[in-house]
Image (cartoon, rainbow, N blue to C red):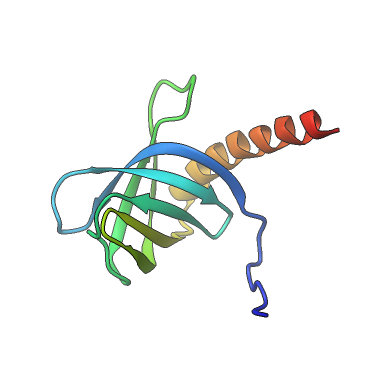
Length: 119
């Protein structure tokens, strides 16, 4: 059995986002599957990302006027036909950190709400 080597809790929640691959044109629709302090997982409709590609993710949270932007690098992209899962490691600069915290706080609140309903 393989050991999970992640250093941070992953918060699972689905959210529509837009992703732009550096040097490959406009934003494309994607779905955020989960997020942690170090990275996130995206569901892409087509394989437009390769390991090593730089990405910008535009996230529009509910009840937030302006979108948040995250930057990072694709570490893997696996799948078939119309479903591709991309793992992204997030940059650690200050702007990214603030936006990541905003999204993580939103994800944490969803997690808390789900935990309360199970009790």
